[in-house]
Length: 124
Image (tube, rainbow, N blue to C red; front, side, top):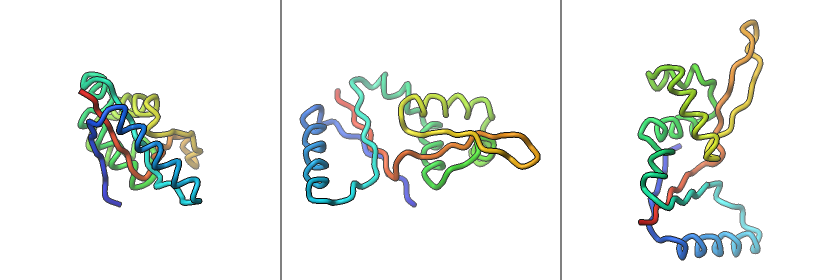
């Protein structure tokens, strides 16, 4: 699945237009596209959540849920740095985590996407 991140600068008017389009589609019985749209008021706020490293985490998780150590190896990054990024992404509502038993090795935390596509909107 190809990654899709879109930056939109259409402000509250665009947000409400997209919300109406989604509501109309739901009223017609259409299935939502499985996407998350996140709006930010300032570039600083957006960059606190969306560093280049965290976007790479999202791109990898979108391909399927993964244990954090596997994700860290795939990204060639330090495990503790990836864990910090996951906490930030989870607080932002972009990923979810769950504990899973790892046969003979205790438990590990699995990171899963919350949508098939993520759209990020910045109003300047």
